[in-house]
Each structure stands twice: as structure tokens, then as C-alpha cells.
Image 1 (tube, rainbow, N blue to C red):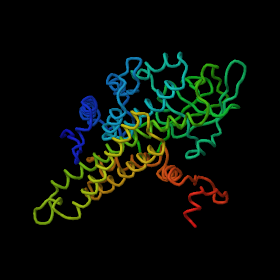
Image 2: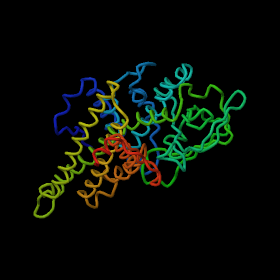
Image 3: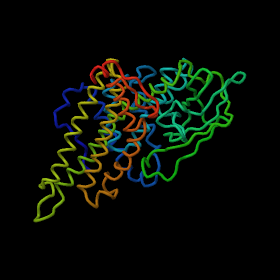
Image 4: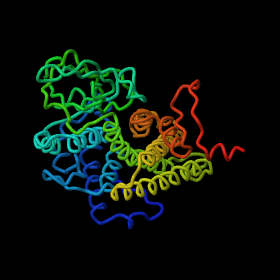
Length: 406
């Protein structure tokens, strides 16, 4: 297997710092040497490669932007490049690291007590513990505010009731960050594996993210101690802050998927001989597909690089993250489709990575905010009008809209 040399049509590497390039290249080597050789087997067997978790921890892939507890405190661009290289291999591998970092370590670090941080951040950062994030429910995905899971005070603790669905790492997790309705609004809780009344089961029959564990969590009169609450959580906005961390990483990760399908299609087109002994890369139709792919990847690289610089300056806004997630996952989805067309019948067999990426990106296109919902987030920002509500509910147009209409 040839080593990946990157996709850099516009000579963007000089815009990265030396540390950022070093981080990217280190993760790239790990992916090429340790993950690529087994990922098709994991996909076929529908298993996550747990044997690699300790190595990921040793490479500081978990919680890499945290600068305490021996973690490296990397820039958000370096973190994004890590997500890119991991998803270049498989969306399920990136999902594992993304959940561990953005959806478990981040809320504990940002909203947890000192005792919670001291206990869980080192364990999660080293990979000695695995976490999951319980927000989505069977009946509430795009509208998390409609959640039915409840937590009520009872004596010296809390009692949880409800269920969560489509939870990455659910049955692997030692600790679950669970969001529930309380008398004080939505709050976050830490629920440990083995707590009576807490169950988890895997989702079977998946044709997407097969190298990732997807689960359902159940809470039936699940009693947790008073100090299980994340004390600094004050509402649903805290859960959405976690999602923004994850969506930022997805915007980078999707480019990794797009790069893999593009380079696979490019190499195949230059080697596949048809019609008079010429490679199919000499045909205009094939070149047009390849040009579209590299053009959109390049634009996506510029988008996430600026997002990363804004995030490092604490200026990145949620609607900008929506733009990145929405655009780059769409690009990855289209690149997978075009690569499959170029490969023909070989595009549907796992001798090549295209069909696996094509299947995986369907999940990424939907989770952490669907393509359409992110469009509404952006639409609300640019118009000032939220469009999430049912048609019968009227929304007063901003004054400028009315003036422009006259």
C-alpha cells in the first residue's frame, strides 16, 4: 500500500505552523501503519478496533486541545488536522475520537466539578476509560429540546428515566454524559457503567459506520448520586456547545474522507486501461469529475482553516460551524459518488475504500445536525427569521425585510 502524500492543490501547507504539520504527519503515519491494514476487516466484521485505543491515548489523540492533566493543549487547527487524518481512514474511527474528546472530555472539563475533572479527564485522555454522549432520543433528533428523559431529585440523589438512541461507544463506555429534563431545565449528568437501572445495547443491521459501535441507552429508575450532576450545566445550550465542538471536528474529518475517495479515483483513472490502450484519465468526462473533486476539497480546506483560526481566537460562531459541517460533508458525499462512478464495478467492492466511505458518509451527513437543519441555522442568521416552526405559526419579519419589500 502506497503512503498518503496529502491533497494540497493551492499550496496551503505553508499556512500551517510547524507544530500543526508535525501533528498531522504523526497521525497520518499512525493511520497508514496501524489502522489502514485492519480497517476493511473491521468493517466486514462490524467491530471497532479496541486494540488501538491505548495507542491513540499514547499519541494524545483524546482531548488534545486541553492543556492540563498532561495533555498537549494543541491548536484547534492541529486538532482539526487530526480529525482529517482519522476520517481519511474511516468515519467510525474519527467518530470514536470525536466523541471521546468533544462530547465527553469537553463537557466534563467545561462544566464538571474539580473532583469530576480530576477523576475522568486523565482516564479518558489516556484511553484507560471510554465515554459516550447521550442526547439524541428515539423520537427526538433534530429537536433535542423535546427530550423525554427526566431526572428528578430523590433524597440524596437523582433518579433517571428515559432512553437515548444512536449513541456512539454506548456499550463500550465506562462513563456516559447524559442530558435530561429536570425541574430546573436541561442538565447534564455522569452515569457510570454498571449503575443499577442503566442498560445499553448495540444497534444491529447497520450498513454504515460498521467499524463503530452504535448503541441505545436505557434508564429505568436509575439512581445516581447527587454529585453525578455536571454542576455548571444550566440548560440545553450547554449540550449544544458540546455539539459545536464535535461539528467543528466533523468539518475537518469529512475532508479526509473526500481526500481518500478522490486520490483513490485519481490513481485508478491513471492505471485503468480502456479503448485503444489509453488510461481512462485521458477522457474528458473522467477529468471533469476529478477536477470537481479537487476544486471542492480545496475550497473546503480554506473554509476549515479559517474556522480553526477563528476558533483559536475564540471568535468562531455556531452558524459558521454549521457552514463548515454542512458544506464539507456534502463535498465528501459527492466525492464518494463520483469516485464510485470512476471505479465502475470496482467501486462497490471493498478491495477499494470508496464504497465504505460512501456508506459511512451517509451517517455523517445526518448526525450532529442534518444537512437541512444546518441550512436553517445559516438561514436564520442571514435573515433574522427562524424557520424551524410549523407553517401555521407566523413570524414577524424584521423591519429591514419589510422596508426592502416596499
